[in-house]
Structure formats: C-alpha cells, structure tokens
Length: 152
Image (cartoon, rainbow, N blue to C red; front, side):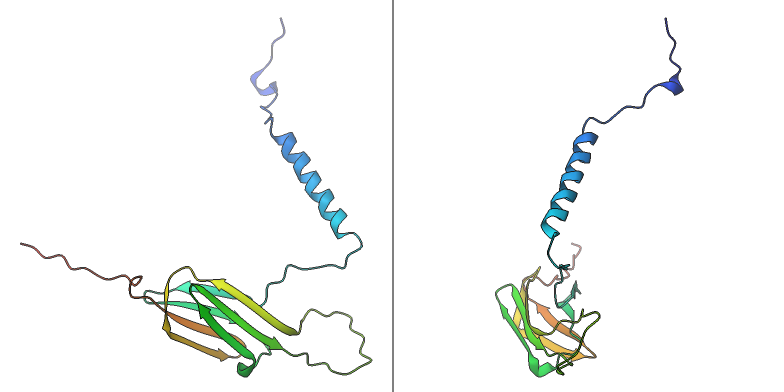
C-alpha cells in the first residue's frame, strides 16, 4: 500500500477553471481578429463628467476645454439631461503633418439619464476654466424631510 503524505496531495482543481481559460483565449482571439486592419480606436465618451448628489441638489460637472459658453446647448426632458456643443480645431492651416492627434474637434452630444427626479424650473449652469457645472435642484417629493417625534 502506498502512503501519500498530506503535503504531497494534489491540490483541488477547479473544473470550471479550464472553461474560463478557453473563454479568455476566445475573447483575445476575437478582439485581435476584429481589430486587424483597422486603425486603433478608443472608446472615448466626450465630455467626461461626474455626477454627485447633495441633500437638496444634484451636481453634474463636465470637462469641456476649448468650448465657449455660446457654443453649448443644455436641455432637460423628463429624466434626461442633454449636453450638446461644438469644439473647433485650433489648427486651420493646410500642409500640417501631425505626429499625434488626440484632441478631437467638431460637434458632440451626450445624453445622461438622471438618477433622481429634479425640478426643471430650478437649474443653473456655469462654465469656468473649461469645467461646466450644472446644478439641478431635487424635486420636492425626492428631497428628504426631517420629521420631529414628540412625546405624549
């Protein structure tokens, strides 16, 4: 009879690990197959933004460098906030040969579904140093209210 020491015992092998390895390989294969022959593309969502909540308002900040306030259009419909605008290219000269071009120009539009209901009558927006700050006051039904408890 052969003795197997506890330390020499083979570790438990996860039967799903091999399937995961195959799935990762297929993902890599499909990614390289689709990208072959195409220029490098980025999943770029413009403008980049943050949304955060305070007790009585929702704040949306968006990075919009090089965009003038008159080139922006903000609208709200239901629970969707839309930011539209245009960023013009600084380089209008012909005969330029770029080594790298990452700053895009042209029209943009971004629609955001707001996480809470807001009062469409109380909205403020300002653009300062390329940062757009939109302040949306919460609807009265959503604003938390403090309820005092009285003793008999």
